Image 1 (cartoon, rainbow, N blue to C red):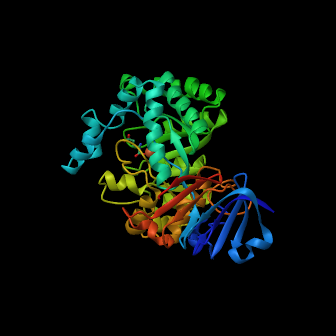
Image 2 (cartoon, rainbow, N blue to C red):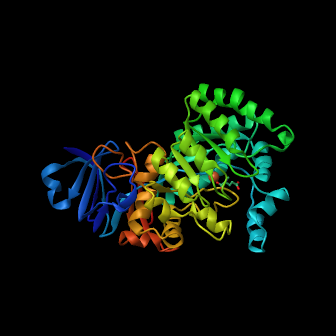
Image 3 (tube, helix red, strand yellow):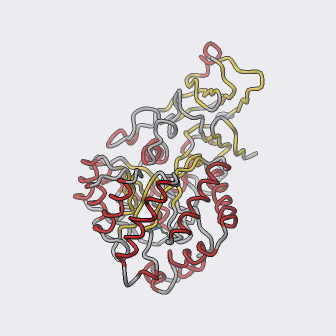
Length: 417
Ligand code: NIG
Ligand code: FE
């Protein structure tokens, strides 16, 4: 068969191929092929297997790109299924205040938090917002992410939520990052609706959701179900309206306390319940039975100084498929790096390297319902890959130059040298 792209001279390829999502013991099934080559044509993988078999199977086109992995490992391009990457403004000062001992809640009560980003994002032009976001997407790409989710939710008016989603659409068309858009008008209760919550929910349900769906601006709808933000009943109303309008569902649940969010997640059910720092075994059983993916965001726990991580081991033991994400955002998502999320999952939640890798690739792709196209290296899927400078486990050497190259749809989009 013909190929216009080839990666050769690998020590091993961790393909993460096979059924999705992976739960229980299968969470660790990263499927390694040693000394493998990967060939692709027009952005799709056509061959993956021992390099010794390559010449019998693959004929390279005259202008083909050949990447020498120089004995490094290859893994699938990372999929980051939870980001708030679109925003304007700056909350680095909150990080300083947290380091001085204030909590997320203290800071939010003092005018910081999500609502301060809302002020800056509402004020930004579409061009400004796109330029700010583009830089962050570039950073994520350099860390090996080739597909991500991106949410609205810092506008909280009809116009500014649509503006955020239009920015995502424009970037999805012009940036190498593949982006799955999420409408999150229920990220926070806007100040102007504090005394009439129901009116805001009606606006989200009767106006924003139908408009977003009609204009094809989002694939998903997400809600921040949390004590003091949206209640389980409010979250259910919003997500049911979104489903009726044709959107797929995700939820922020049990991030800062037991919020009832995982019960709503299991009952609807949603595709992915995210954060789950405070979920208990009963909540985990519910998710397992309903087939909901747990998308865990250890970078947020870390930078918010929550003093704990989601119970990743308990979720895996309960049979819940675990995905990882960065939660890139101005308040607690200070790292764009999926390898850093994997590192914290290993050292903060007790996952093995393979469990974390599956969480950052095929299970993350399942979390975004794109597991048929991305998240693993197998014939027919997109040629999205990360070439590691050494063995794959070097990915968790935070701060070292371990990513040699990043490939999206058969194009080298980042090269370290
Ligand atoms: O996922 N939980 C809600 N949203 C973000 C935080 C957003 C912010 O602080 O701006 C999160 O942690
Ligand atoms: Fe979030």
